[in-house]
Image 1 (cartoon, rainbow, N blue to C red):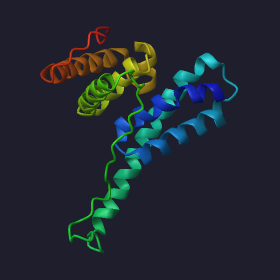
Image 2 (image 1 turned 120 degrees about the vertical axis):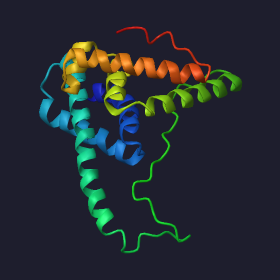
Image 3 (image 1 turned 90 degrees about the vertical axis):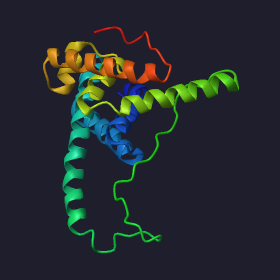
Image 4 (image 1 turned 45 degrees about the horizontal axis):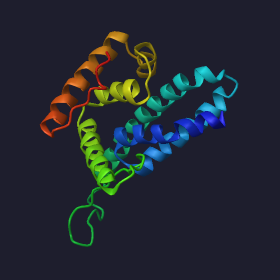
Length: 189
């Protein structure tokens, strides 16, 4: 179990950051998901853990959105009670933080700069995708799940997964091509 959790930790964190756009919340989501997996499914065979974890992670992200919606409603209702910062501007209670660059480090500084810039552009394009397309894309291409596993994790049909992935790849190719980046790796259905 420990080896599995270590192997998925960074990718799960990145997935959660893409979904909620807050490092602290993403970390909480990943930790909660790992705890749920360890508590409820520790006796399951290792080959079942990736699917179970992805399902738990996606459900925890959805729960976070539900809680945030309720909190935002209450925050909005009580925003007149001191909702200004030191400059006199209204505070944004749901500030987003930039995700850390956790990519592998290239050999030369020029390569490192190019990779960093390319990853920033790709991450920006992925963040601009609609939530379901981003979720399908991340599960298929980031987590390398097949269509059936992705459908199970997302709680939808395999046809929906294929549609979301196709639309995501098409949208990403347009966004990235405009920036001069082509990704041939996004060719599978």
